[in-house]
Image (cartoon, rainbow, N blue to C red; front, top):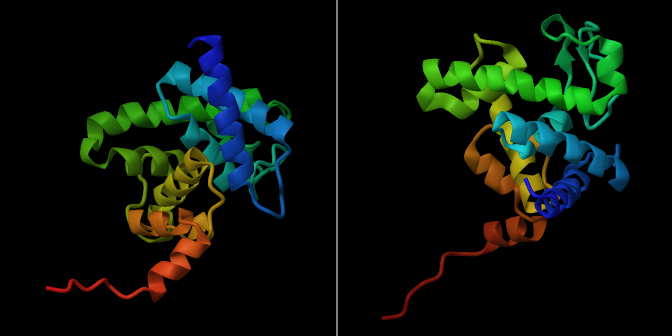
Length: 198
């Protein structure tokens, strides 16, 4: 990727990161640039969508690099499971570049698996696999993990602050509703269908 294109992509993704950040855990723009650089580099290298990597970080840790999961095995900004990583929890917390590298590696493993085993359910398989492993859920709260990631990714891509909590997304319709500006959501529910005079 040419340097001008890379820099433009980094700034756009960084703006998306700032837009989707939890208001109670705002992300400084310089940190957003650092996260965006890592996500774009590793996504490009692995043939993935950098917005998905960023969405995973938002959903898993609210962009908090030092977060450790309740059982002590999910670490860093992307909550990489150390039992499947060559890196220690300490390293994943200290180095967001490595954390995004590991998230891209895991997504690539599930992408390859899902292309062979679940080609008609590729997005849900890849994203839910990242969260739950090969025997991923297709329904309920766990089954809608992919929708939460897609919601954050679509909002970041649009540079839009979600008007609702993407963690409540379960369907594509939910995603469209949650990333629509609040003003449009309110107006759309109050408007009556237009009538045609003949």
